[in-house]
Image (tube, rainbow, N blue to C red; front, side):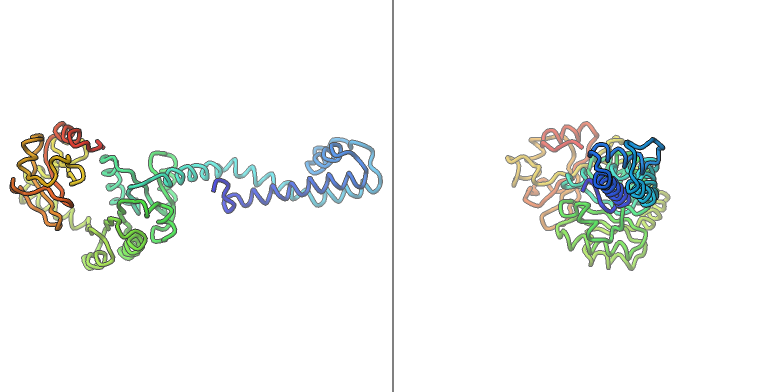
Length: 340
């Protein structure tokens, strides 16, 4: 709603009180003094604003009593109304509201987006990756300082509030989202988010952060597709750099962020050309010798590294191809995949 009553309640009340005083004063002068509508309105304005102008006409005794009563009853109200309206303009509250309203309008247009709950260290890294991939996303965050940064930046869609709140998730478009990433610092909060999100959208892919090993199983039972322990991954990565540094550095170079020389892309069965579906990988390689097919995910969910050329491309399967950015771009063009 553009003119949110809760947000502008003070201004609404001030305007209504001001209007009542003006209408009451105008009608009072018309009845008591018998003046015209314009003269009565003008006399009311100069009376309640205390500008000190002279009367429109000579006041009768009854008119003087009514004017005194009008001044006494309206002075505080008029000052309150003007100060309330001025406060909203000077403080910039109206700008905050309209920025939030604009963000909400954009969120309502989203479809197939990613909801990121929490903008801490892990959440910010997730957002950087989503940006690089070209995925549409929005951030749900409680911290006012973070939200203010988003308002000033203007490039990140946001919603302020508690991500464990079902109503907020609905407003964030969880019903139309393709995935939700929850990176809240508390495992119990992440568990609530996972439960709520899967209840609202059973097809939603949910990826959760976990701080404790014991929470991983609970989060998966709640419906999380994947559970990541950032601290554990970081420590393991550092240890592998000691044991197999070249292998780890090579794997770090395999990215789809568009910044490295080696890129990894996944191709869904739906993106495979019609004349290649249900055929073998060997047939696909002959027709499109662009990138190296290094992995295959079958319809049963099992993965195969360096798949056999006889492997059939069937519904529900995915291919994982490796190449440089130019090869990946050429592959996307051949398959008609939208370049991110």
